[in-house]
Amino acid sequence: MRIDVITIFPAMFSPVLNESIIQRAQDAGLLDIRVHDLRAYTHDKRRTVDDRPYGGGPGMVMKPEPLFEAVEAIRPQASAGCTILMSPQGERLTPVLAKKLASMQRLIVVCGRYEGVDDRVREGLADRSVSIGDYVLTGGELPAMVLIDCVARYIGGVIGNEKATEEESFSNGWLEYPQYTRPPEYRGMKVPEVLLSGSHEEIAKWRHKQAVARTQAARPDLVQPKGEEPWTG
Image (tube, rainbow, N blue to C red; front, side, top):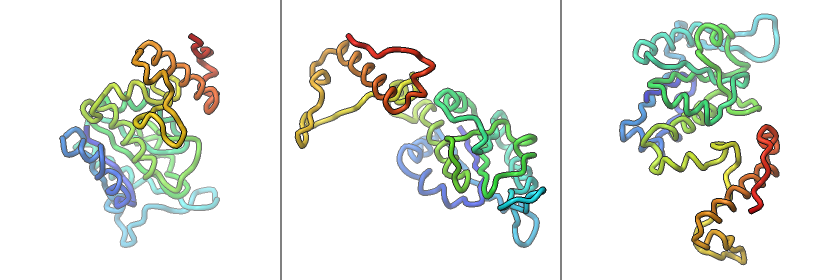
């Protein structure tokens, strides 16, 4: 998969995208990530990418011209893809959406800044707007990195054990069950006996019960639609 990122802070991406699993995926040819400086698509000496909002108000708004020109310059090289605007007003990033995006050949990710982008970018340029949560950050760069990392996990070969994505939090509607490793006891805290029993059936029951209980305690909003009670067996 090829992912093009458009931003006014391209240097922010290297420390994250050139490490760990994402770097190995690029080395293996599974990912081709290219970061583009939006200011390269401006035409004035000051390389202006923002202006005051019509109607007044605080802050500045990103201008449509450089964003349209940047995406249009990249699109001929990135056909059969999806242009995504990172925005607090977008649809929530979920495993379902991440899997759908991972099935595409190309993504173009636009990072907003300041008070946002001219809405003509959302209306006439972006295929969809995506948010990573119900909060506002200083810009779209960190959300873009989150999106890339999340999507990459669903690309075949990126994760060594692909079954790992099937049991993690939110994959089946619940938060993930507690995980333990050696030693069996540390500072008086013991690994639950059932995990040492070797009984796959009992372990599966325990994990499901713990996942449901953890979700009910920490994220009751996820439990409400399911209406499922934790296992008692």
